[in-house]
Image (tube, rainbow, N blue to C red):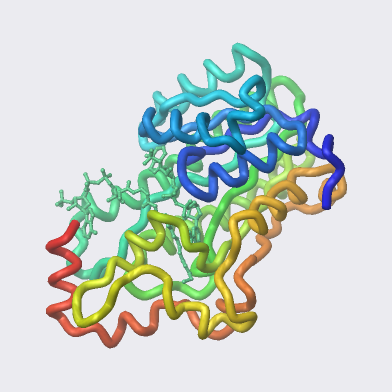
Length: 283
Ligand SMILES: CCCCCCC/C=C/C(=O)SCCNC(=O)CCNC(=O)[C@H](O)C(C)(C)COP(=O)(O)OP(=O)(O)OC[C@H]1O[C@@H](n2cnc3c(N)ncnc32)[C@H](O)[C@@H]1OP(=O)(O)O
Ligand SMILES: NC(=O)C1=CN([C@@H]2O[C@H](COP(=O)(O)OP(=O)(O)OC[C@H]3O[C@@H](n4cnc5c(N)ncnc54)[C@H](OP(=O)(O)O)[C@@H]3O)[C@@H](O)[C@H]2O)C=CC1
């Protein structure tokens, strides 16, 4: 679909690069000639990502740095370390945290567990990359991974929707403020992609024959299926490439049209209290 060297000149940081979608994007960027740095909290998850065949076959262009994005000093130190080897050209804000809960039962710590990486961490990383690009007069691109539910809102995951809507506002605001400085801001809003954590955090299942996971969701998606990670990775590659140079401030949904009919969480409105209690017990 793309020229093999489409991203040859790019050096890309993928936050949450040990997760499913981050890993798929990183592998695609490497296939297209980019150098990639992965970050995340868990060194084990990062090592596993680097050892995955799709990434390991480009080992000379793939590295990883553990970093907790909730800590602004840790983000600054990571960027300092990265820039010692040369500037990034792209930041992909992919890391996030999410879980379903009755919102009125969230503690402040629980709200921060979601807002910390998903909103603050992405902003810290964007500021650290952006000011380095601006100081050096370099061009740069920030790609943020949102969610279609930033548009629809979504019951039982309010802090995540607030974080994603905030990142969409950042994308639009900085497209204008930083556009004249050569920095492009783009975003992708995925619908349902059956990654291991999304299924566990958003569809944990709780008895009553509910096995959890995304089984059954395809029925209400207009094109009849969930998203595939390779499709998201290809969209990301396009948005980072030369032919997308005039696209900024935009968020592209990739969800088979699902958000135009539903946020995908309406079935949870029918859950009895016992089921919510069971999910809460499990965490
Ligand atoms: C269908 C179409 C649309 C789809 C839309 C999908 C949109 C987005 C999807 C995704 O983002 S999927 C990706 C999700 N990935 C992750 O969440 C990965 C990272 N996960 C984590 O880091 C953890 O799972 C975490 C729980 C989110 C955070 O862990 P952390 O170590 O920061 O927290 P803790 O110290 O364990 O807890 C802090 C605080 O939070 C409370 N809490 C934790 N889990 C729950 C829960 N399930 N329900 C309620 N509360 C929870 C925990 O009790 C602590 O609060 P206090 O008890 O101290 O008050
Ligand atoms: N899967 C889906 O259906 C959808 C996903 N999305 C979005 O796509 C992106 C990727 O999701 P997905 O691959 O499914 O989820 P994953 O949980 O697999 O990936 C999220 C990654 O974020 C990292 N992360 C979480 N907290 C922090 C932190 N404090 N510091 C650094 N890294 C952190 C995690 O690594 P570690 O725990 O090691 O830190 C994890 O690898 C997210 O932004 C998500 O909101 C949006 C819509 C739908």
